[in-house]
Amino acid sequence: MFIDIDTSDVEYNEGIHNFMENRKTPPNALHTWLIMLKSWQSIGRYLLPTMSAEGLGESDFRVLEVLLHKGPMPVNAIGPKVDLNPGSVSVECSSDRRIRTVSLTEKGRKMFAPLFRRHAALIKRAFQDVSSEELQQLKAVLKKIGKRAESLAEQKGHSLLLMRLNRPSRPGAI
Image 1 (cartoon, helix red, strand yellow):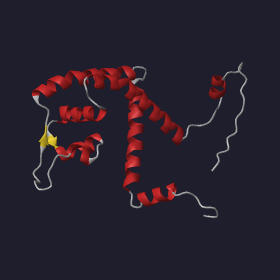
Image 2 (cartoon, rainbow, N blue to C red):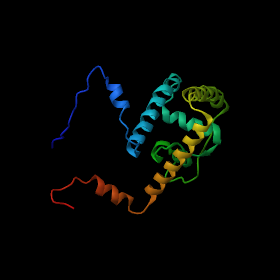
Image 3 (tube, rainbow, N blue to C red):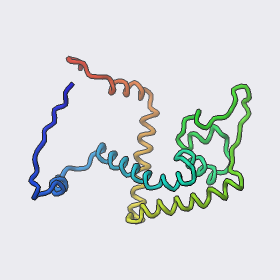
């Protein structure tokens, strides 16, 4: 398999940045998604050292955050709230179906609450160039995208569509 790529030279005097800035293409979903992904990754790299300094990974932090703000909850309810698979947080025994509830101890709350406040301050700093109106717009747009993606993921036949899209094309196939 070969990928054919055309390249073009840009005079150094013009500068590659001018070349890129002068492209007047309307934004598309894929490009916007890539920008959103890169922003998410950059924010993650910015926030991770604070968590790591306390010996926490990202998933640990999410679990502690949900327990701090939501209070005690069944173990099997934590995973979906923090986007972890059930095996990552389940400690239930198949022979003992009683629900196990998890909560922060007072010591845990005293340790985690100041860390979460620092985390929130760092996020606020990352967003400081964004106006309240822009934050509202961003929130609304991201909710709309999230709801649509969730709806599409739940549709019957979604897995079949993915298999068709991922199948290598065959010569002569329609």
